[in-house]
Image (cartoon, chains in turn yellow, purple):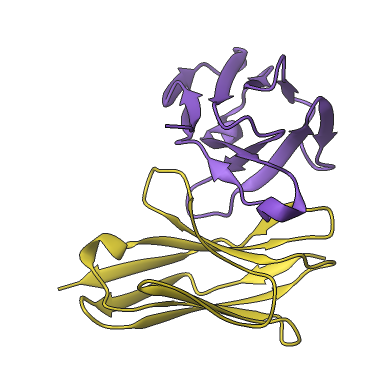
Length: 109
Length: 115
């Protein structure tokens, strides 16, 4: 079966660093995506990993270990506008995205 | 700006009354997707078109149908909405090729309420 796990909620302080973990068990793997979704809005693309290692893009970085079925999204210098849900999604062997339920991040002053 | 547009943003329908949600794109992508997302849940793929080829997910109820008359437009028809169909419906597109990484671009969604 397909299973993607991520924490339901996290809280962090403005200016801090937060790491959101994602573990997956899927029947195929063709890459892992992270999306940001503000309440009532569509998901927006943050990052894509297909090889092991760290991808850095500004304040956001994403890491992948295929052998462990594990990824994390690292957010640095947190801002209030980073309060949102963060969705981990795996592209399976049919190139469909399997989404996790998302991690709701609350950033407080 | 190239984008994915969904209309309306909010739709209210009555129990059992057919409703159509629309999606259009100016990205000229060949793949279009429809997802259902209920509160605090993952988006769930209902079906997708690769060009004119329709691909239905095995667990998508028969109550949900789709049409893609041309590259730019795709419609989601719910023949007899039930209370359980109240959700956000997301349309997404992708180029559908390896070089593009299959990244999906989402529209703003239509929030459907069933009364």
